[in-house]
Amino acid sequence: GTGHPLNLIVLRPRQTETTSMIDRPQAADIAALDGILKDAKGEPLASFELVAVAGHENLDGKKANLALRGIGPKSLGLREGLKLVNGRWPNPGLGELTVGIGAQRRFRGFSPGDRPFIRGRSWTVVGVFEAGGQAYESEVWGDVEDLKTQFKREFSTVIVRAADASAMDRLVRLIGDDKRLQLEAKPHAEYYRSQNQSAEMMKGLAGMIGMILSIGALFAAANMMYAAVASRKREIATMRVLGFRRLSIAFSFLMESAFVGLVGGVAGALVGRLVFDGITTGTANWETFTDMSFHFRVTPDLMIGAIVQATMVGIFGGLLAA
Image (tube, rainbow, N blue to C red; front, side, top):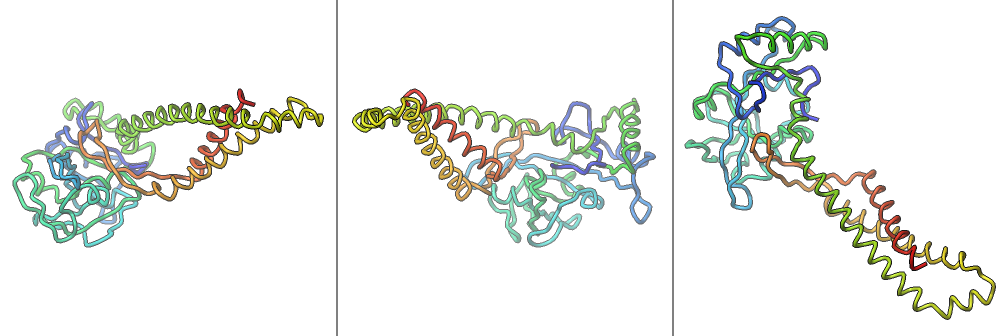
């Protein structure tokens, strides 16, 4: 869900923010294009930014790649959902950092007042922010000129706010067709969707593991129901003598198996909700090779789906035994 619907990100073709480079004259040319929304002072809403990668120790004591974003005067206004949890935003030229809450939960030394040593320099943490679960929470933000000096790099990207949807399309064509710039523009939200490879891989892996566990549970249910049938031969014979049909008795066993699956599903869903909902962890973003934090969310829809799946496992597991 990262990225304003009218924001464009400008960078080198087929590159990410961590590898793209745009020099100041190019950035100024982009900001001067017609169709960019103006602020109250009549200045274009365009932000020149740098995204750099630095190794830093995480909470497990291992090195991981930290994403640092150099921001300018317009950066905060181009983003929605930002909220300071503690402290303030960094001032330019002072080596100050404001840390995303996801990065703070993943890396050492990022509480307000800490002085982490990154890329040959001590920085001062002056604040912590959250962004409603957006990708920014995995980043550490500082002044763009500070980061340019320390990392000896040009800008990575230019973020602009288009006046409207038609201006957005026109800006994409203008930037893409300009042979001098050799840059491309794409919707900011689309760029972040393309960064979602790690999450999709994890969801696919989780789905595969879930299917394997369901098959195992199915055999466990079948084993339980075979034992239940074997231990009740006398009761079954008595019911047959009293006139109950085979189908009725089989259906009663099937309902018992379904009920066991339902109870197990409800118990599992409740445990999942209580224990795992809201847990923050992370993995590598394979597009930018930086650490990406994410949250587990056990939603009511997921709980209902899990209960239905567990009930179906109970039904199919008890079918042969019944």
